[in-house]
Structures are given as C-alpha cells and as structure tokens.
Image 1 (tube, helix red, strand yellow):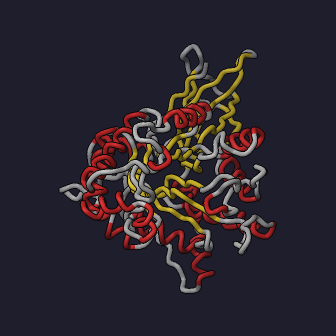
Image 2 (tube, helix red, strand yellow):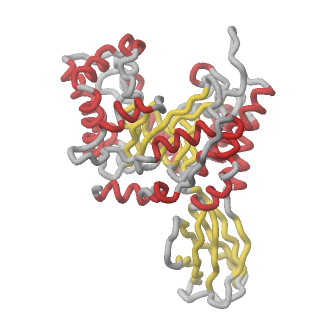
Image 3 (cartoon, helix red, strand yellow):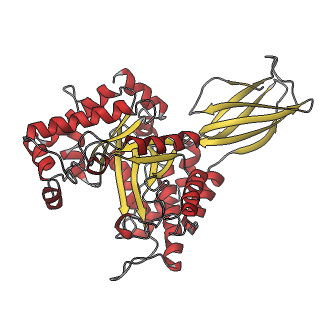
Length: 443
C-alpha cells in the first residue's frame, strides 16, 4: 500500500481492523427476527467502534500542569464520522427565506457535503466550467466546517452537448476533465466520486442519453476505463480520497468493477467503496442493510453510503407528497438505518439525498425537511442521535495527577474552564486508541 493511501486510511480511522473484530451477526430466516438480530447488538457495537478512552493532561497558559480539583467542561464540536447530504440547492431555493432556512438547518445537523460536478451541467459550453458556483459553495462549507466531496468526475449519464470526436478522443477528454477538476479544487475538496455507476454503464437510457461516452467506455472496456480514471485522479491529487460509486449492491458490482479496479499487483486503486441506497421503492430493513455492509467490508477499505433516500409519502398518479403517516414511518426507518450503519465498523460516512423536498430528485418527498424548510420528524430524530445520543459533553475535574480519564465519541473537542475569573479554552482530537496521554494546552 503506497504512502498517500496509508495516510488517508489512517485519517479515516480504518486499516482493516473491522475484518478481525467485526461481530458475527447470524440472521434468522424470519425477516423480523433477522432485523432484531442486527439491532439488538447495535448499541454494543457503537460503544466499541465509535468511542475511545484517553488520559488528558491539562496545561495552563504558563505551560505548567493544572493542579487537582480544577473544574472542566469538555464539549464535542465535531464528529469524526461523516454525516452528510448533497448541497445542491444552497442559495438556489425558491425564496431568500428558504435559502436561509436551508443553510441553517443543514449546518445545524451535518458535517459533510456533496458538491455537484455533473459534466453536462458543469460545462454546458466547452471550456466554460461553472467554477464560480463551486467556489461559492466551497466558501460556505469552509465557514461552517463542513467537509466536501465532489460528485461525480466520470459518469456517462448525459453527453455534454458539445462533446465530439472518436471514442478514443472522447475518453481522453473525459480523463482530462478529471484532472482539471481535481487540480482546480485541490486543497479544498479532498474526497471525490471518481467513477459513477460503471457496473451497468450500458443500460438503455445511457445508450440513448450519452451515446458518445457510452461508446467510448465500450471501446476501451470497463476495466481500462475505471483504472484509467483512478490513475489520472491519483496523479492529480495524491492525497485525495478516491471513491468508486455505484447503485448496484450485488455481486455484479464486485465482479464487473471493484475486482477490475486494481493495479498489476492486484492492489486496489480506490480508497473507498461508495454504496448508493435510494429506497424510493421501499425500505431495506436492518438485516439487508447489514448484509450489504458485510458484502463490501471484505475489501478492507472504508464504506461510504453515498446517496441515501427514504421517502415520507406514498407515490400517487398525480403527485408524490409527504404525509403525516409517511413522515412517522420515515423517521422510524431513518433512525434504524443510521443506527445500523453507525454500528458497523467499516462504514465511515452516510450522505442523504436530497436535503429538502423542494425540487428533490424524482420530485419525491425525500427530504429531511419539507418544501417550506420545516424539519420533518426524521430530521429531529437524526439530530437527537448525531448531536445527542452520539455526542459527548461532560463536566469533570482534574485528579491528583493533574490529569483525567476521558471517554467520548471520536471527533473534535474543546476544553473550557475559568482561572481567577479568566476563561481558558483548549482543544484536542479524539481518535481510536491514541495509546498515550493527550496534552491539552489552555489559553
């Protein structure tokens, strides 16, 4: 494994430990019992995989250890785990009031955002990419400490209207486009969906809507296509986290794409496996969700659930809108789904799709907030988990050794106290099994 991938996997808190430590969940044949088998162990797994203990040594502004008996407030400020959503409608909702509410509700809940890079939209005219719009979203994300991901760099869903040339020339333009986007936003966007939905790249709608890109992939072959795209991406930004993303969750994804995305020594060219989980047609359930995690955890890289949808209303012939009963059901299913994923040690991120019902994909009631930007029960339940049950805030004090034993969820923390009427603050990052005491300097 090369150095940039080791560093990235270390930063994501992975490296294969779950292959040795993941619990064996044996699902019963009865679906209800199978779901219960998974859920009954979820809290134990969360405690094991999402928390850590560490000895903190607290130093004052003079560089000396604090004495015993000093009261401290230790407050989590950010999760290590990435809880996200696409941020496509930022500043583009129907009214200024909607824009303000969209941004406020997003930042209140989430720490991860997917930014749009669909080629046919991003570069409607050749050589005129929509970088200014992306810069606008990047600035907002930086201001709100939201980690960013670009999506997608290569996808043959629709041909850019100006695209022309032989299949070989078109593939070259595709590869150049990958390098150009990554180099332009290097240092800001550090995670990328490099290739999207390559498993079934030749389905009929893609042949119809993107005949040039589809033919270019067919000519070069899926294996060469994905390998070429990832090699270009790696060269453009060696430190980036590179995702292979697909809506297929069966063995076809493994056989046609993941198994092909390796170098000559059979080492993976990707850093993360992306799994789409659009459930417009029905909720998976805990057992199926767990089974999907187990299927892809064997590849020894982090898993990102990149596009998650659970709707809050039944589809009608004339409309598809949220309902009271649907919102109650959505909240229950979202709570269960996130609990299962947060409890699986291979999963590092969950991205919702879309944040609001307003102009959501397929015009579905897919949002965590309604069209008027009011939070649905699913939003509130997630907030209670992400910033409540799975969030650490403690009042404590230093012991006789001028230190303290601290346990909390993995992430970023601040430490606050007062000395002689003066407020003092410091910070630290809690990662898995730090091994040695962490020194926290207050000022």
